[in-house]
Structures are given as C-alpha cells and as structure tokens.
Amino acid sequence: MTVRCNTSSQVGAGAFARPAERSAERQALEDRKSEGGTSSRQPAGRRPYRCLAVLLSLLGCARPAPAQSFNAARALQYTREVVAFGPRPIGSPNHKKLENYILAHLKNDQVEDDAFTADTPEGKFPVRNIIAKFPGTRDGVIVIAGHYDTNYPLRNTGYVGANDGGSSTAILLELANQLHGKKRQGRSVWLLWTDGEEAVKDWTATDSLYGTRHLADKWQKDGTLRSIKAFLLADMIGDADLNVDRDTNSTPWLEDMLYRAATQLGYQSHFFARTIAVEDDHLPFVHLGVPSADLIDLDYGYGNVFHHTPQDTMDKLSPKSIEIVGNVILETVHMLDKTSN
Ligand SMILES: [Zn+2]
Image (cartoon, helix red, strand yellow):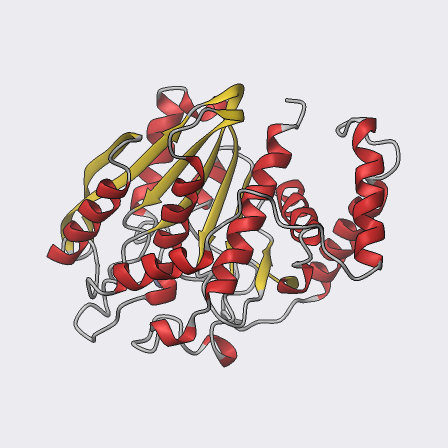
C-alpha cells in the first residue's frame, strides 16, 4: 500500500501525531470511558463481563484466546508460500499463479470474482478481486479484505512484498480456515482478496486502488453495499515489531471497537500509539458510507524503511504479529455480530 497524510502530504509516512490527532485520541478515550455507563448500543447483560475483563486486565491477565483461535504458524507458512511465487504485480504470470493458489484454498467455499480490465498509466491490465462468502444466521455482511498484488514499479528488482501483499493474502487464507464448512452464528462474513491496490506509476486517486474502486462502485450499483455492516482491512500486519496505527480516514466507532477487541485480548500495546491518515483499499468504501477500518502498521523498520523496497522479506516478519491481528479481527467480528442494527 501507500500512505498519504491527507492533512499534510509533505510530512510523509513517518509523521508523528499532531495536535488535532491527539484530540481525536482523547475523544476515543472519552468514548471508551463512557461505554460502561448508559450506552443503549450495548445490552446491559454485557456489563459484568466487561467488568471481569477490566479486572483481569488490572490483574495483568488477558482474557484467554477464543477456543477457535487463529493458527499463527500456518498463517506464516502461507505467507512463505505466497512469497515463494516471487514478485506478483498485476498482469504477471506469478500473479496468475497466486490467483490459482488462493482459489485452490477455497475450493469447497462459495467463491465469486470481480474481474475487469483496468486502464492505467502503464496500459491495460487484468484485475481480479476474489470473494469467498460464508453465510451467517443474522442479516448483514462483514467484509474482511486484504490485497494480494505486489508493487508494480519494483517488479524487476526482486521485490517480493512479504509484508506488503504477502501478509495480507495469508491472514485471509488462515481466516478462511476458521470459517470453512460451517454456518456462522452471526452475520455473514465475506473474505475479499483485493487486486490492483498498488499504483503502477505514482500514487494518485486514479493510479491506485483499482480493484476496490471497481468493486465498491459495482456493489453500490447492485445494492450490495447496503447490506455491508463493516469493512475491515488488513495490510502490512506481519512486521515483527507490530504497531498498528490509528487511521483518521477510518470510521472512528469501528476503530474504537478494534481497540476494545485488542484490549480484551491483552494486545493493546500493539495498537494506536500513533495516529496518521492512510490511503488504502478501505477508501472507496469509506467514500460510499460503509463503516470501514484499516489495520495497518506503517512503521515497517525504523522510519518505515523497508516499505516498498526489496528489503520487504520474510525475515522481518513474525507469526505472532499476524496472530494478534487475526485474533483482533475475529474478536471484532464477534462484537459486530451483536450490534443492534
Ligand atoms: Zn504497497
């Protein structure tokens, strides 16, 4: 992916939070403080449970991981296998191999694709979003997305995008393992491997996010968008030194929910120490009114030095980081299962 600080583009990806952003954090803190009180969004029955969670966190113990928890070793192995294809930019033979690898993983699932030709500054390219649908018992859909293409301008440098492209592909493959073959007791979950996230030349509104711009538009036209309760995006979440940023382009209440999920699982030290504005695959959905949140760590190496360089390799990653984000996503999905609308 690429970051743009939309409030100040000259600051760049390594920017630290500024005063306005600190006040957003203060607001989030106030929101979190107030939720134990009279909020009508949460049933009263959850309060003792939350008190228990607070007590456990005061005692220094996190709530035990859910029984059906994310398999970190397997997720890292998927990342390794994805990276082994080599560079995977749009239009490349390696990209095609990866499409087939993802589809093979989903062979018993309900799969659709959104395939089209993108017109780019480097010519026309085939783009293919892959969607696996896991039906639930409740109305509404939760989309969990991540991109699988790798950076196009670096295609001849040996760049393999272990974190940027690899980790996002793999976390969805492991989430699919949690969902295969059973009816969800909750909302439907759709896993979405997005394509054409990367710019082919320089990141602009029209040279980036090819796949999600097309899909959001299609889902708006056919009415699908109305059923989507939340759009959760994972990008660059494998860094061994995991620091997920709070993103001001994401929907605040959904970011707050992610933070609550992280806190319940004892992972809060990996979340939201820094606040930045991120341009990523969630934006086309944000612009069309879908509650959306980007789980992204844009501090990849000191000052983000490994991002979009041939140094984005497997040795920088940790299975623990993918596990943390995977479990936070699963916990957030459980929370979204219970929201009132
Ligand atoms: Zn990228």
